[in-house]
Image (cartoon, rainbow, N blue to C red; front, top):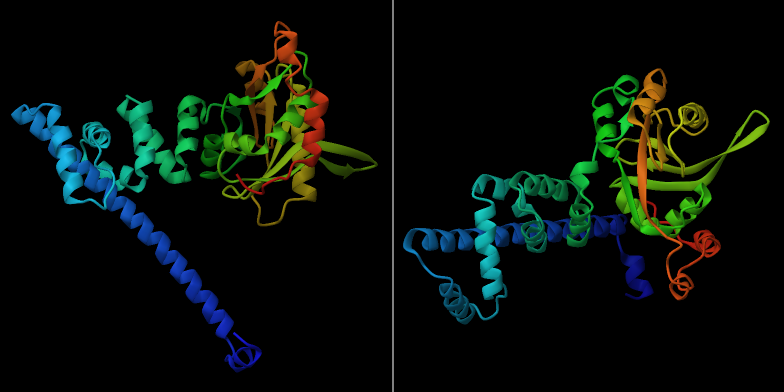
Length: 351
């Protein structure tokens, strides 16, 4: 487009073009979702037909090979009719006998995610739980597999908190479901005598894995975030903002067992963040104390009369044992190298 054409464009043309482009992109996404839904429903119906024939008429497994051959011949431009995939269709129909659940939940997931659910989970209730979470959070296949393998269902919502008494419903329920116990930082390898700064440096180096483990909606604000209070400076280990809860999340890292005074320190941090950073439209800030271990009873007593919402969770990391051969130890990054990498790592804004 030359200069004369640009000059001849009517007022508002750019805005119209932008609006149409957004509408086309939205339509493309909707079309892709609709195509996926129809494909998954087709696979379920094929699998259900195979299953019914095998159960009622005693068809053997060799029929699948012949069916694969004939379908490929009839639809040469269409993939997905291999014997292996037809067997997955049969297993898919057997795993989800209720067509209503198929249409409402699993048809919204790409076929690869459905295969992962079949491969990784045998319990129907767990399979449905992970399917619903995958739909809610838009998990890719690798993320779904990671969540299953790290037993998310056993960790979600298990932190000790005082949310019920410090947050209004439904904010309290949402916040409770947000926290895990323990947090799985198996992407880190730390020495047995590692300190909090070493844990923080490792998490910042592996910020993407860290955000994945925290869950959807976490936006990174900063590490060692400085707060000037009175005539002193205080530093928060990790500060996030949660896009769904609409509040700041303060994380305090500990490499030892939970102690009651940790709750008092977190209460102090939350008061400062609410006063200095919180916008009037934000929900109350939430604190999370991440410890190496905790006694649940002690944590419950420590939080009982606190007036700020605080949760206590534990974290798991891969420990670097001193029994490793020297030639292997030399291949691993030192704590100092981790900290240098942490200084240079680019931070994504959202998990």
